[in-house]
Figure 1 (cartoon, one colour):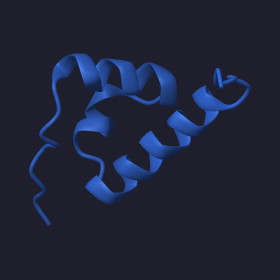
Figure 2 (cartoon, one colour):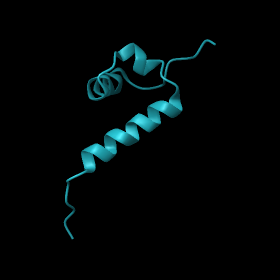
Figure 3 (cartoon, helix red, strand yellow):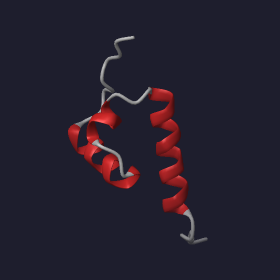
Length: 54
């Protein structure tokens, strides 16, 4: 199956590559639903421990 690269910028791919510790090429060709799942995991980790001002 020939998959098209994800429609994300190189900057976004670099950031994801660093945060997920995987090669950029793997990010670019990762199935979109898995990429979205990984983004959700990153967001949850980054929001953990942050306090909102009420």
